[in-house]
Amino acid sequence: MLLLPDGEEVSARRPSPVRALSLPRSLGRVLARAGRSDGLAVHPVHYRHRGWNGSEAHLAADAEWAADEVVRRYGDVPVCLAGVGMGGRAALRSGGHEAVNSVVALAPWLPEEDLAAPAEPVKQLVGRRVLIVHGTNDERTDPELSFRFAARAKKVNREVCRFEVHSDGHGLQGYRDEVLSLAADFALGALFGHRVTRPVEDALAAPPPIGLRMPLAAGFGRSLKR
Image 1 (cartoon, rainbow, N blue to C red):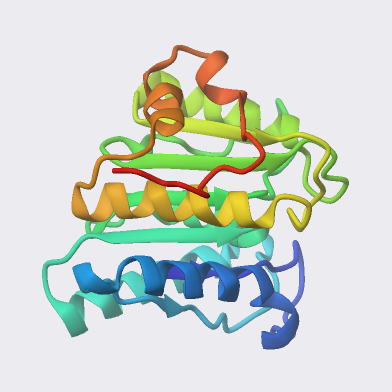
Image 2 (image 1 turned 45 degrees about the vertical axis):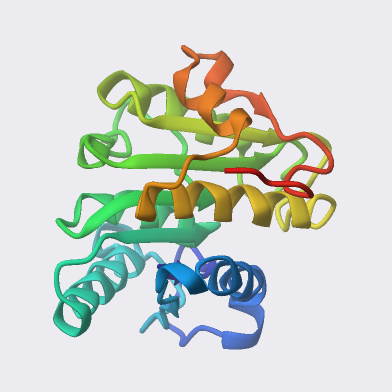
């Protein structure tokens, strides 16, 4: 499991590990505990630059380097990329790496759709299981853009689902426990073949827009059963 922290649109500065790793660190603790018996290894990715930086796509390049490192260190194992904000975009963009079998994008930053510019690619996600989670009151990253992205991705890959966290913002603080439980349930199902919870099953099976606007219920994860 590779954890990709948030970043900025343009910046050549080094990232702040304390600020950038807050939500990924919480997710890492939940995943390490839940996946211990399966032998799950969880690693945060430390970017070289704070920014995506246009066509350089530095954060995605760092995610791909990290996936290469997993293969070098562990051999032929499945990898899940889990990113927050700009790290969510990096996870989605790098999902085509041969070792990656799943992607979790929390409040992903995605560019405005512009007829003059190519759309954010989705074909690299074919054959991967993808979860997107977004707060409906996110004022930093537009949840409508992640819905549009998910709708395009669903056309080429049925294994895409998206959950909406009503009234929550970018940091997903209001329903943090539910979001972390959802991400862990999804990731462990993808990596180890565990049966996922019914809401995830329903979201993956439902046609758009239903499976891409699935509400995350309060209390999700308090009694997870596989």
